[in-house]
Length: 256
Ligand code: NAP
Image (cartoon, rainbow, N blue to C red):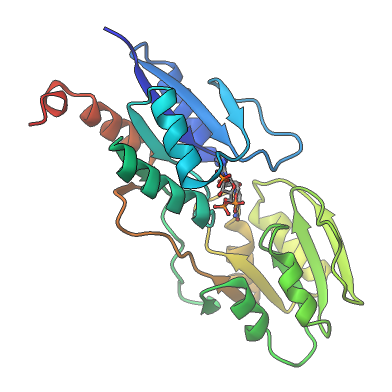
């Protein structure tokens, strides 16, 4: 019997962990797809491809041409376009799809969050009075803060923000997580940060700044996710492996 062909849309730690687990099985043949944004992507445990497919049409054609049996969307919770395309392409090709997406963080006692729906809303939420802001939302949407030049920004990203922001006070830091709470605490104190802008990514790798903010009483503007909610979603790699088994079980094959 041929191996099950799985396309994993990746770019996250969970996608890499899932690919690692699938690589250890001899009944699956997985391909990991990356957007190709990161200059030096990490080594991956299975074959990879890189770059966009050309929208949902391109993805549908790719799935058919390469005879995939299953599509797993394990992209970042804020990568909304590719997730939307995956849902359309799966519907069109009738190739089963599920998402592996870590659970969002929930506010805890002591947290001072303002929850917003988008990065432009986060800019608004900072208010008119000048503040010392730690921007930890990645580089792609940092440009929105050009409309609030009154603040002083410390901007952290994996790859450089290009072009830099047209604001008078911005400093840039390149760093890749995970970030420990103690180091985050030091960073917030040393830079006299008054407010953090973060995306509700979930997971532990970038949660240190949130717990550090809690203990220091620092405000957080939290950008919440906007993902299609009609796709079956699991939150852990183990649950994803369970669903893979389920999809390839003899009962599913007979359409029971
Ligand atoms: P996006 O806005 O949802 O996607 C934009 C376009 O990039 C998609 O339409 C698609 O191009 C291409 N693309 C995205 N992910 C892809 C993948 N895994 N394989 C092939 N093509 C992909 O996504 P994004 O915010 O630019 O994020 C890009 C990647 O970075 C994602 O894989 C995501 O997991 C990762 N990431 C994102 C964030 C974040 O905060 N947004 C943070 C960490 C990691 P076509 O339409 O041409 O197919």
